[in-house]
Image (cartoon, rainbow, N blue to C red; front, side):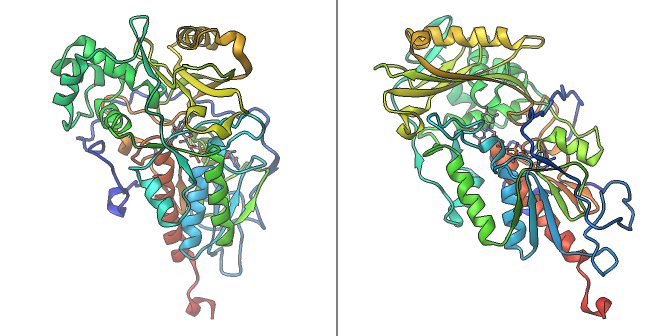
Length: 458
Ligand SMILES: Cc1cc2nc3c(=O)[nH]c(=O)nc-3n(C[C@H](O)[C@H](O)[C@H](O)COP(=O)(O)OP(=O)(O)OC[C@H]3O[C@@H](n4cnc5c(N)ncnc54)[C@H](O)[C@@H]3O)c2cc1C
């Protein structure tokens, strides 16, 4: 039996995003290739010393079969991103022996920061100080040094022009909407339109591009978009930026895991589900393969992302929020000078690809936003990288669905999922974090149940 039972287990739900009447229209685009071209090291069969009795033969590739009829108390975690690291720490703090297996040669997953002159994060930048991950890190003295967002240099593109402020007529509408509980069933655009007008609905929808990475966030569930928009644009802003990139946070999590005795195997790609208790903390497509369950899918985005190092020019903007096409550009060296050599700026930009749009077309649209925002930027480029991401920017909930409808964390028989596409609340990596806590607690319980009593051993 699968359950998600998150609220019952005390995981923070955050705002009012979780409540709805349970209706589910099943509209998922479900497209995520989750591929990681050629970066995995060796293959790891995950079998240990033979078969496993019980009701789930065929799903697990062998067992750490102890002398107790297949019973054991070691928990395996597959995947060493934020979710896998938090899950491993949770299990180790709970007293279990933990083995964490990571395909890549280093930990962090999408939260890795490139070595070298340009310290680009593959994925995350913002760590939200009003969120549950921040609180958990703080309790453990694991918070890295962070930078605050710059207060100046913010621009918006609206009707083809770069402006310092969004149209001010948006403000009364935002004040009216503030504190309202947005419905799960409605799309965000029509919900706003009914309370304001078409233009305000378009403006607010496009503003949500920064955390949805979607080409048209107005299509998503109002209950998904509105609380996240309120959080992201709260004054003062809750976003903080780990100095030196998210790699600084990964280093701290790894140290904590090792201190607790977690065995970490790097460069080892698991290709069959290990013996339970096991937490699969990979991207959802890889989890679907390991569990042999093609129904494990959820809506996400197709996004083109440009990392660019530019020669410094005074008066470059810090942020450009694209209210025409839902894109976003941020110059991260405005907060953290350690990210690029002196005299250069590190900028990351993203834009959701439209249905059927080729990456080159989306890139050309994004470059037009650069043309407007960063004068003569093409001549100033010192380095650049394009990434096309399919289903890698986190879960999106379509109208009629909420996080509760995503793939359940507890898959039964001691198998758990963690990651940013499963049934947990939160903003971006907070979903990975909260699901990891839940999976860790579930695996500890499963390990406790499977641990032999002294009587049985005797
Ligand atoms: C462009 C972009 C911007 C983002 N911005 C933000 C932001 O500002 N703030 C924020 O909070 N979040 C942000 N996110 C989201 C954040 O990056 C993710 O939610 C988070 O990193 C997901 O962590 P994870 O551990 O679930 O998955 P991953 O980081 O993908 O980790 C999965 C791990 O599993 C490993 N693995 C896969 N298959 C196997 C296998 N068979 N055997 C062993 N190991 C395997 C992988 O190598 C990987 O290390 C952003 C994401 C993107 C893409």
